[in-house]
Length: 362
Image 1 (cartoon, rainbow, N blue to C red):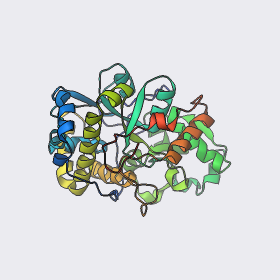
Image 2: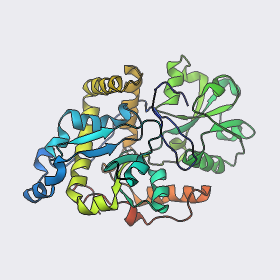
Image 3: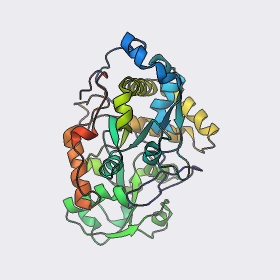
């Protein structure tokens, strides 16, 4: 994976691989089901009483360093959406070397966190009493990238080729992809760099469409020089980023959970509708955190995240934050098949969206 950011590491408990991800993307913004009510109107008299303790710091842990992947929470803070929801002091924490969002949640060092669905399912089955409040990313951005000149034009051409994989849950869709097309590649462990791909050490590299793929383009490689296999385009639509908390937080502070989800949704809707302003905030936050990046990269990222927020069929948008049982079951099936899960947590015990969030039902 291409790495230019400093001090930023994303954890992968499943494979023991520390992976950094800069989110970037192509075009388009998500089609959202209309949101009922404004933030300032959502806290009822009863809710105000329940939110009395919201003046204390609420720690919201991201799984990576500041970038457009998290433009929603950034804009919720910047535009005051958290405050309008009665959350006066939301502290967004960025991941640094050694930080593992679900571990921090388990240790009580954060109240809420962002994380990947596949990771969360394994953590839940392993004993962490977490619950899923809202699904932000509805599709997978994982892909394989090959040189066009290599003669790899179809999935079947991967048999016998050296394919770099990151390990752990990142291999789940790749394994499913190989089995779908009955191909047998030579799997090579891929480090946190695509240099081996650039130097010909592997024929095919793993990439995030919103990150490494765009980094290759920014390096001067044209899209025509590459042959890409995005797993979502092959029926492997696996949700990624979601918002999580512990069962105790969900039970004892349901209004706070609902307020945070509403504010994040508003932040995302604002960011996608006001791209230039959102990019200004993202870049300012990156600069303050000593993260090297550029506006074009973050613009690609923001547009891509907007795209994968939509459901797998753009003409049939899903309610923001929802997680279908079918999507959950598919991820569980792949995890079981890969041997990364012994048994599946019940969907009803895992997905517990706040009752008072319009459009999202328990």
